[in-house]
Image (cartoon, rainbow, N blue to C red; front, side):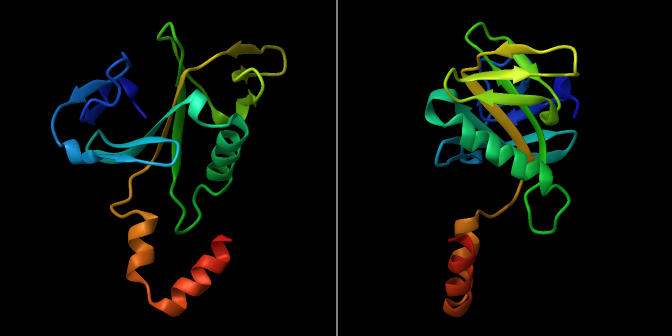
Length: 158
């Protein structure tokens, strides 16, 4: 993903110097359980960018979500994970391969280990997860299925 050519609908990353903005389309923003999801455009392709504040989400749940998305990448009917990056109070941004990090729940820090000999910590205040963009939400799909299928679908989710 070429970050210096990214354009976003609305202004989700007003404080993020990596991105150029594409104003307008206020409907391209959705509120989620732990943050806001924006519809983003890069090189003519659309992506969903989930913006989270560290205080709003438990690090262990975030790590579990990212690890699951990485393991399930390429599986049918699973949203594809593309990238994650973090920003801190000083507006420093950190992007890295998701296999080389750990999250410290107590300290709300990220421990990055690019190799066996090097590691450093970073304390983010915002987390951005770039994923495949889907036209419909899971809730939209659930409303479209029959009662029998809803029953089985809810059983799978539980």
